[in-house]
Structure formats: structure tokens, C-alpha cells
Length: 126
Image 1: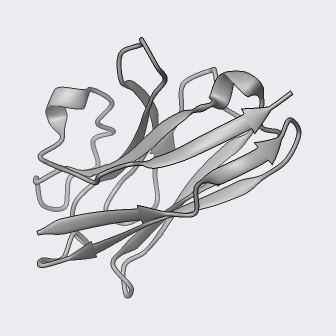
Image 2 (image 1 turned 180 degrees about the vertical axis):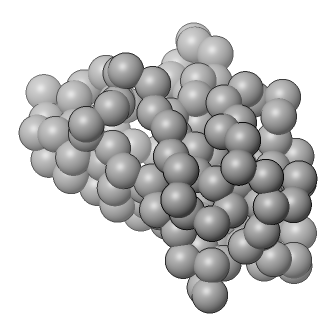
């Protein structure tokens, strides 16, 4: 089972990036998916979650209104559109998959997730 992130890179403040996370080895089309990030010297923090159906999403205040999570279950892929990026958004971004089928709960804790990608670096320059 693999989750593979892509789309990271370096962008100037105010710019945009779109991260993708593709699943292989099994399908996650019926489970919640999330994004987390970890900056150097800091703990991994929650960024976004989307339910299996895509009907519910949730973000912390730090990214609300700037980031959008979405998913394409036919492609077993989840996306994170990041707009109006700030230097403080610089981090390694990880996607994660939960393992409860067809739940509408919005999982926000790191311990809730069972599968993790290897991460993709996002650097925002000022």
C-alpha cells in the first residue's frame, strides 16, 4: 500500500501550488483522506481533511480560505490546492488515509490516520 505525493516545489509568497496524492496497492475511495505538514523543528500539524464522499471538508484557521482539499475517487487521488501562500506555509506536506469505511467524521488528529505518504517539500520564499 502506497500513498505518493507530488506537486511540491518552491514558490514566491502569494503564489499557488497544487499537491496530489495518489494511492496504489489498495483503494481509499471509501475512507477519509487528510493532509498534514511538518516544518523543521516543529511537530506535524493538521492541514485539511475530506470525507470519503467529498461532501465534507475541514481546515484549521491557519489555512482556511487559502487551501482547498478535493478528491477524485475514480483516480484514487486527493488534491490540496494552496493559494496565497505565505513563508510560514513552508514545510514537508504529507497525505494520509484513514481506514474506517464510509465515515462522515472529520478526522484531524495524526493518530487517527493509518497510512502515510513520504511527503513533498513546499518552500515559500518572501
